[in-house]
Length: 368
Image (cartoon, rainbow, N blue to C red; front, side, top):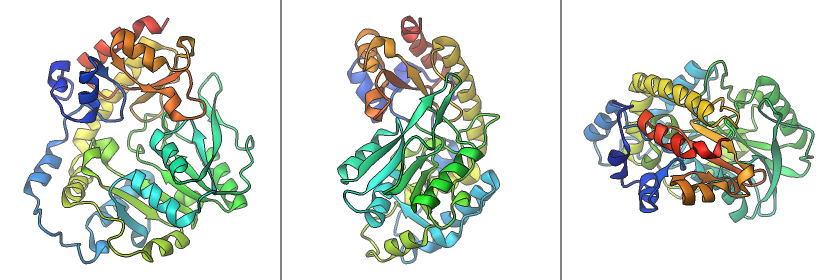
């Protein structure tokens, strides 16, 4: 059933992905929502949940999601977080903002691989921090970065998005070791956004960053990307860095808010019972990744995520705008991803075969 949805059915959705595109007379392939229906065990858990005050209201550390997150991280990635380091937020952007708030000051320099996730770039700018780009480099055979290309002396933090958005790179052990060396040398806090870690394609493997830099890492995690739950607002921060954990715990109990019961029970259901659904979705994404490569060609297939970073520089600085006007496909504009984004566009291929065929057919004239 996941592969049977079509444009008329999806056009009736009220979420921002389809609503904005439908209003513009377009098919969406922009924001990072999947079109696949949510897994039935998740829907059942939300329906059956007690929506009164939760049992963990008085003590967030009694939240049942802690042990599930710890066990799942160990099972999938071979790293077991300290349950006492787990904190809850409504979403990864909020978690990033809170961590930067307690660990840095306005004017501090924050390093990040670019191009990068637009809300993270906006967060750095709006919080008055100074972005130090670590450029992703097109080597001809894929995307890489030069550890020594930019001096990070004076930086206070490194935001590490791994798997990387928008290029889809999965950083290797050697790359992570090099970054850990930089973090140690420059006394950097590393905020590791690993939200796409369950959407990695063979033969690549996701390696959590925390074991590379014990004591100076905060890891952000959520079920929202792998299980299509962004609107339920539930994210986890594994605050392994003691000074950051101490600063967070000094804040008033409810100052930062907390996820609601639907987000918690949905995440529990996803991680405990969503395996078959995720396996089917990963199979469809692998096929779609191949179809995009065959249909468009001029890009490096992502090693993870359901996002393709398209090289469309022959169309000018903002090819997504031209494609929307001419062909009615809504892509994410490359310039929004910061330095290195001009001339590119990001394509979301997490949809059914009929919808993807329509998208690729409309984009075919730009692939030549």
